[in-house]
Length: 538
Image 1 (tube, rainbow, N blue to C red):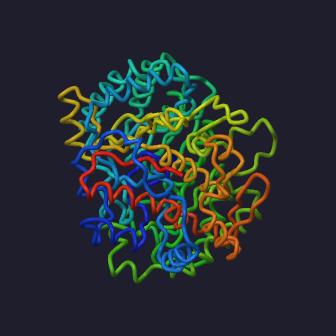
Image 2 (cartoon, helix red, strand yellow; image 1 turned 60 degrees about the horizontal axis):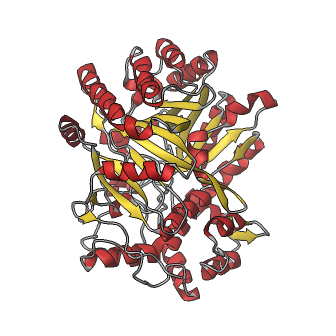
């Protein structure tokens, strides 16, 4: 399954240090989405109670963290950012009250919306979920289940109309699950839901549909194009037909090439995902996959390390024994980067590569707006905020990310729909928003969310940080920057902290590092039975 971003509507555990795990109740071996606290309720942060500063580390704390965590497999945080869904809880007030507050904030703030539409269904595989996938999904059992789900999806779109109808769309992403399981006639119907909610869809925005190669054909891609989509993202994962068998997929390279050819025929921008660190994969296997993908003419490529976590088949002792070593994975990251640069690709995140357009008129070919819009979700003019990017999610397991303001007194939040189709349907039958749980940000959480997104691009504009949050980032986390500089993992100039060398590969670990004290505060607050977590006071 493909990685879509922004905080992105996918549920996957983040990597936590042993130190963090020790402080988490009932955490032994547990990094799944079903946190022991998920059924408790949270209120708004107590903004008057002082707590320890979560940005101050000692030199020895930073060194110990890095020395311990750098020998563990990395777990990317492209999916949700800060904090992991394992820290989210049931809201104590109706979601409609939060949406009413968002409407109030919108009177004084300019929002642009990146819409995510969720799909629950995937083809059944053996091993389950392709052996490695950590995202929520339900087995596809036939079109009758799809038709029933689309009825509930339309209902949820209608429920959001009073709250979202005046928003400006910036991009749309249909994810899952496997959205290309739908029949050709479904795509126009689903786009009709969007059109009705927003009173029309702008003709110049990016509209992406993800899927798997074997379910794309000429008829379906023609219907997808006719419905208004202009970008297709395929979770290919491996182009070595012997290695892809570990996933249980019945996928052939001919299916991949055929789908790419039809995308080109219908002027659909193409993107594929490939995974390195796969069982029994060698360096030459990885390079051959990249060579074939480049020669096939893909416009955008997401190349990411295999996530090993939870109860997936690939996390079993037997499969772990087949994985490349951590040091080999680091070498794979650098060798892949060198190859893609040599082929005219430009790296835009730790995982994402775009083909440089031959001429200016082809700029659309290398855009990935749904993800890139969130990497700098606050636009400003010398500190005066003029636009904020949000994620609005509808459907199974969809996430809504609402940073309503960067003012330290503002209320912001993130929340997720149910990841069980049965629970989603039950809430829809009651005509209730199908929200399972969420997290309410204090001001420091907003700063961490911004930093997590920025770090994905392998640099942090510390000048932007100062102007947006009125804080000096080089003073905050000063011990972190000093240690990373001594290791050759960053360089610093007048505007940016730039991640270099192994510092790029270890960005997931470094995100965990800068958030570790804040997460300790959250756990400590809940252990004491608090309903809210105090804002960090510098």
